[in-house]
Image (cartoon, rainbow, N blue to C red; front, top):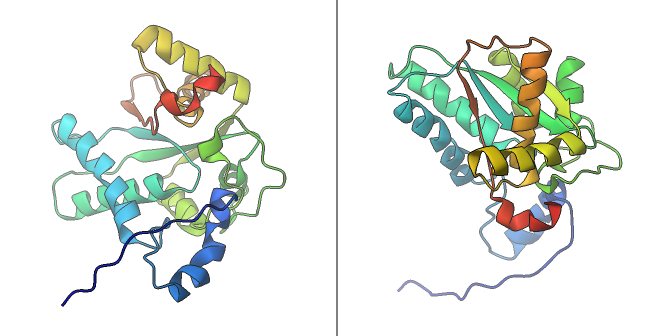
Length: 218
């Protein structure tokens, strides 16, 4: 007979990137670890964003996907799915990825623009975008590989630009976005203003979370 167990939980104060230090504890406690990049359900699940994007565009692939990068699970999952779709012939190309991080915690942007193979830990991370406050992503090498393979771009935005974009999205589009999501809107101004991308290009911005979680930032 299958033995039924009752779920339990414990609370630990730590940065998201420090969760990898609990691997041994979880294993010894006979628990299931649902941490980023440990279970495939996380990154493959987020890869469905690529499926939905293509489906809603009648199986046309956008030129760019702008994504806010913290742990990078969404970016890596989407790139994997776009690659799979191209391999099976459902689409004929993959998009270029644009990784966005706040200037108070930007280990991926620094590593990518310095042509590094891995990210270094960001000292004293500070940003209102708590979902992006990850000083050393566990999948740093994978994130950088995805950006390189897509001939991508990595850029910084300020907290002031993020907060302004939150208000802009709410006023103009009726979208209540958390700071991490609004970082992509803040990036758009740089991308067009500094002519990193052409205005005729098809660009998808990914909003990863609701502003209901961060009402204090409005």
